[in-house]
Image (cartoon, rainbow, N blue to C red):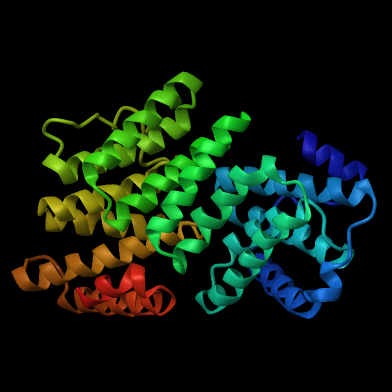
Length: 350
């Protein structure tokens, strides 16, 4: 509310909602504007006036709040407004973050290479300003939301851990711990040692108890449950998550999509084919546009599980539907491998 009030006082307008089609148009217009404006001359233009810099900073803050609220259309609106302000008026210390937030909301796979270029250019702007305090958020945005498409998971996980360490050393505990969550996520799908990952998770959980961050605690707990199932089916090391995740039939529950995804993965590795299919389809039905990393992993597991259904000739499943899911999975992995052979070529071969 404070940010909204300040923006209104500065002459900006904030819509109560943004239609999906309007959000799509905003993204397309901003990408077009970037390609038209971004050049050496623009890079030499420093933004003049504190008002414009304050506007961009506030839009960045509101975009981040929209990310946590899972309000995709509003997230698009705020990020596009911040980027367009920079493109019109030159760069400032808040420009890199606004560009990174923007590339995180572009969902069209055809724009992935362009977005990666925009994100790398944004990271290079750190050299122009004193941005030490922004490092945790910059690392979260780049390595947690964008770079995983192109750079090895191990590289992303290592840099997210650096974001975590920097966050704690500079007092930005929340952003540091957000980096930690994404470091765990990336490490898990990189094939890291499960027992080492479990120890890392327990360290983060200890810190989260200290900082009393309930939402992040629940998120990491979901990952812990998955790791314990992969180690020993949860017999010896499991923490029960069900009491912390709330009503899974409530659409406003921000944890349920991630929980459905993890339950599908656990079911697959435990040999529960029907259960894996159930949670895979539940996850796909409520997926929000920002969850591209987990969607990609889910497409992979849904394809493998559909192949198991066909091999086992399980009753109650449509062979046509399973074959379509398998074809979709192969297509998705082929596109992913085109961007990062290191991360996805082995999955495509499976």
